[in-house]
Image (tube, rainbow, N blue to C red; front, top):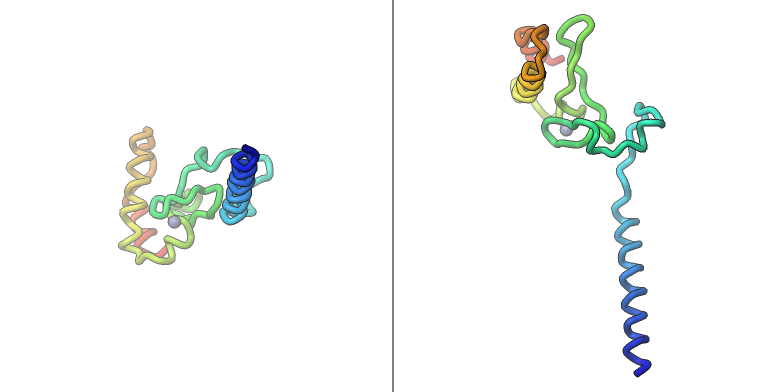
Length: 121
Ligand SMILES: [Zn+2]
């Protein structure tokens, strides 16, 4: 009757080793460096994300498009922004603009945003 217990122990050890290995293979993605240290403990789900690849702003930097001298927006990460043409980018800006409007922002003008995006900013 000692053999089944021994096999059970091996199985448990194997399970632990598998878990440790899996954990090592999938490390937490590197947090981008501009995020202050005190924010790094906040879960990625607390940040909003790129409108295309949905990577949390905790792990990637947005491409900021300035639509006025002082105001900008970043619906896309730098990588997605580079993969798209200006007209392909437009729907992601429109969606964020509509989200802002839904939240009560009436100051931002869509015409300014559209102009900036189509100009390749
Ligand atoms: Zn992206």
